[in-house]
Image (cartoon, rainbow, N blue to C red; front, side, top):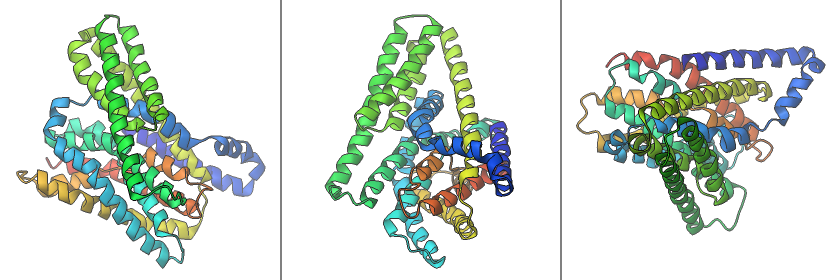
Length: 383
């Protein structure tokens, strides 16, 4: 995954270079600006590439390990996301006020919701190189898979409140949240089980790989149709096929090909995502005060991440012998990624604070991936 991060770094440098070049020769860069402006990065991530990444990630998670850490993972990906959203939103409202911006607090909570989901892809890829406790590995992977779906649901609910949808009473919020979560879990279970039954009836690895693709595309589309959480559906489907499917429905040859196919898909999707994330820097509006706000919010996001982990960590990890180190790895390894950028870009031209939060999101994500992602090895080496 270091290669993927390197690709993103090159793309960021290219994006900045293009921005500088445009200031001297706008006509030379205008075709690229037109292309990137017309490209819907938010829809590309949320409606297309995210389903493949989540399915590929959950396909390799051991369900028995996940069951052993289910209480912690559930708490991190639900209570942790909500606490982080409230903390970041509240402090962000104070920070932007200090910089002279008047932004309604509900939009600050919206920013808190989009920046709270973690995407520790770089950490996951290097965990196997160190003697990290299996429970901690499972917590990091499990949280990253489930909190994407929860984060999107929280963002959707707060956005509906922010735009002044009067129908969104407290009861309506609970109803929408329940439909998104329960519907996503149910559709994922149904799609995964259907794929499992089809794969069990044949022994032809090419066809079985196509069945996994059908599960992803069909299940995600079905979730969107019923306004359920597509990300949660993909996680559940991947867990079912990756565990029950490999054990009871696939031959050793098929399991090997399915693993290799989805590892390749994961690598390709991550590379494409990181390249686009870097190039999108070209479109981010440059404003010194925006950058200063973003730099301050980097610290805010890290502190909020740490605090949001504390309740569940000390409730379910009382027997751990290296609490401080484990908590440090969970905090520093909670990287932000493409989903945060996609959600922030969905706010462009829709809210008065859109550009400010896009810049702040980019600051946090770039620091997260380029600094945290490349330095987490020093923490892991202590085990």
